[in-house]
Length: 313
Image 1 (spheres, rainbow, N blue to C red):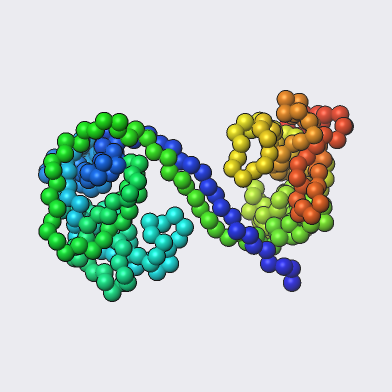
Image 2 (tube, helix red, strand yellow):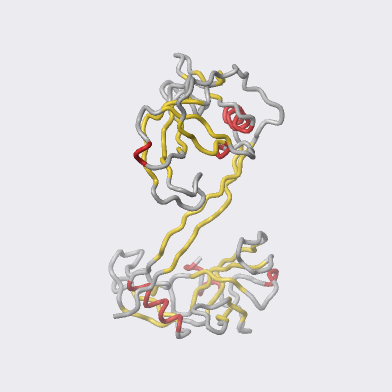
């Protein structure tokens, strides 16, 4: 029985977006410890505010300040906080209808245990010490048994208003390849490129997927291809990736390995980025202890004729 392969993977990138006048006022208000909602034509106050009425789709911009105290409408206990969550000790996720609002705001509630949380309990905002104009300016909610805190009636107009935000998006997961890709990875350990042939169309796919993407039938016949190949298309990378120790600019290319009917992608090295071209013949370069090629370099062969790889573009 082959070794079951698995590896932790993370997809991470900064998401940058601009904000309209309503969201700008809401976020700037958080920075200034002011909670703003927006009033609809029929008098409902929505917090967090939106720019269009979810019932009528009318544009709405009538900003209204609401209180920093409120009532829990529903909740769920989080016994094991994850990286990046509001609190690093067990807490409750709560929907809180702030005083003066008709909708609920989702945030964390700092409570000693789940028994201390219930629907209908009164809470108030705990502000973060440093505020930048983000939902995290509310550090969390906390239990509160005092009088409702009345808003001052802020107009929603601020100096130095927030106009955009950058949110870090990240997905952590564990990847485990299936039979076909496990065989491919094990072959790479021996510095061999192994794909699979479709029993119907007879095309060879690498990396193999266990099924033909064209015919939809299972594949099992293994075929060794390459290791040399031909650059079909490529791009020049000018932005340095996080945690990737490669100086820019560099070239990433689709490479049609000899004997394969699908191009795989890899970095091109050993040649200036401005000298890479379609049809360039390349070969893999391995580093000691690596389970996959570090990059591909020119073989010195004449460029491949366009007709030999045009179907793989």
